[in-house]
Length: 523
Image (cartoon, rainbow, N blue to C red; front, top):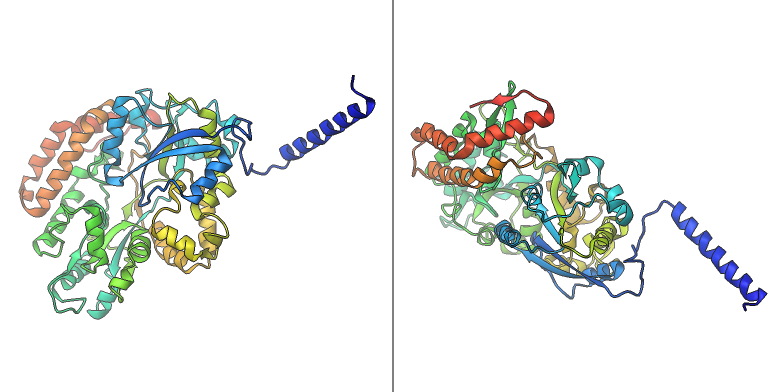
């Protein structure tokens, strides 16, 4: 039998525990260290993750990811694939039906896999296991990524303007030329970059236009000057389109597209485009830019300041190199200019329907969405990799960043408002340099696909890859002269016959259903 004193001790202990629990529940703050299965001493749960590398590498002994694992009581098994190979390899993996616990996919790529039963509807679990995640991501993002009314993915917020055309400002200065503002000026500058020895090395070894990733990106601002953006080629879900006078027009067979092709072909004929642009691998193309062989490219905002400036240390190779955003843009014959809108969804994370670790996965993602988790996954360990977010990285942190292993998990959960807050108040010279490009990317006129975010149609799944492949093949043939633009009508007819027309009609049907509209095809 318990004594009176022991009973009072137990009662007092229970009361203290109750008060502590109530204080925690009423505080309204995020949980810094989300529990894992309610067992502080439980063995870590092994979770598998697949994602594009995003210019990063995975290190099993990374102290940052080790700390995240400790805070969330998990052990991560991560497969990071090169960006250019990710989709094809993931498609093969999905076809087998065996996917990791978590898949980080591009924007709406998940839609083609949902009907295969690969992904889990997380709706019933978010409130219980991921309250911070649910709260910290904007309601419109959750709504945008619903599929047939269910939530199969966790959205990753993106700034709609992400790419920046950049030019060698030091070459402009050497040649006594100004930043191009229209297509005529742009053409003259590209010729000067190619033929007037802008690096003053006495060699004929430079080109005006090059690439650092995919060739299609470098031509984006040119298409924008004609009022369109075809999006990225070789996409399994093509059909970037625009709405005009209650009709929808596919960009790839529009008159504006043809006019842009004609302009690009003239640049090709003038030999101001790197002749390897259609065949060179992205890492080789990046090295060529770092070596000072090209004077202009368009790519993700981070390529000039980070990939070339910080990681490849271009200034050590070419001391005078000065990449500057082409801003406010290159205007076309009707005064138009612009870039592709990537929309406000940058990626998603999907959870396997076969996973046995739903709670552990969501608690892990929930932690990454907290202020503490976001800061750790983006900047590393405070006091070791950075002193504070505004002052920038320590030498140790900068070395880790340059070696590309510091922040691979920063790609999993976004907190756009935190990133913007840090950027606005930063004192870090590196961040200030990044800001020059980030801010310009956000300020361009952006062309948004009228079908952005709409579910894939059966026709899109069936015909999309073939139509995209045909568009890419013919783009290269028209530009290089292997097919004359006089065959344009034949190209359009073939595009329709290969499934383009059926694809367009199916998407318009979906558009009218979801938006209660009455638009019709413009072809």
